[in-house]
Length: 514
Image (cartoon, rainbow, N blue to C red):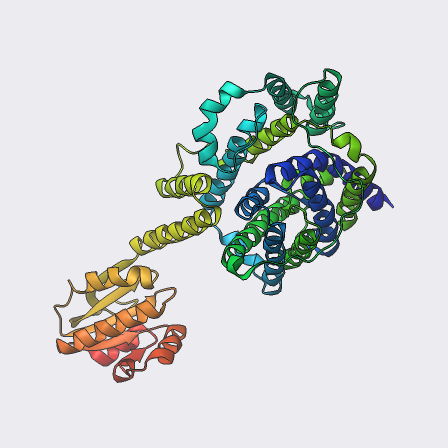
């Protein structure tokens, strides 16, 4: 009973938080406020019902809205193509869950996530500049920035008053009040009343249907399939990252452990159904999830109650919601954009490692000015290359006079080539360069017992080294761990390793070569 009571109040509180955000994201996406509301209702309910993070609240989020808005802009006047993107994205998320892709999200380097999230925050802020001063929003960051100086000459002072007051309320509302009445909802109610009472001449949300949405299966023309597929993959990947990061936050405050693959299946089902009602897709929402947990939400019923509460609002309070000024929603979204910025990284940016800083800045710039999926792809690739470089630089290669282990006995005519560190594609070329400097003996033992792992590049490098030493008439022995030997045997098609003696320890090799 206590659990249901907590879920009930947690769900209602989360719905109060979600309402202005759902409306704002719907407007920002270009699909309309009601699309944001439908997205929050459908995704919130089914992601909670079938997902793997019990306390998580799902709905439209900033990053997902930005990608969805790109689809709306690309396929203007073709809602079927737009919803095909969402439907496919949901199906991809289900596949990610079935294929257990969720566990790999934690391996995305933090600078990539930081640059991406801060980039999304800046995009939201820039795209709300025009609505903030009462003008129609542009569909791109570059257009908005380029035209904004001229837009200032046409600003609507009444809209500017509403948006500025909204942003002020969002920042200065005391915590004691915020715990009872969320700042976003407080701003939404007060500024809408102010606009109506003073009869401000500002754009509003407009008519919101006070009825259940109709279902339809989207279809699209074949020539649009490539763009649809690219956007769907982008949306699915972004939703996966966005959701599972929120799941980790939920784990940390509830001291539980989510099921990432089940969560992706729930999110995929939810987003697929959102596509059938023409809604805005979404993901696990961090702020709403935290509010839910802090208000007592513990199980999936809290997310379902959150959705049912929004449905009641949509059915019975739609006429009132239609009077909400767009400038007010712009002020709310400005605060959302500011909150998305990754202050954790920004606070240490002066002292951050140079390589991490480079990755973060490149991802940030690509996110804001080029393309979201390219930003993540380039970021992960660049971070991986830099990590490989660091590991390969730490590799050590030494050549010494042969000496029996745990003994002072020295073998004058034998030298030992010790490879110490990761032996893989990143370090193979380094080892090859160093080895070429050390070929001045007649008997050599290549000792690989200090190599933690070995890939195909390393095996081929070792093979070339053996052939080179044989050409120089150097007698060779090889010391390997059993797991490395097994791997070599699987790929030794040229039989190079069959023709040399391989030992499991250095002493045995020395005894046979002396």
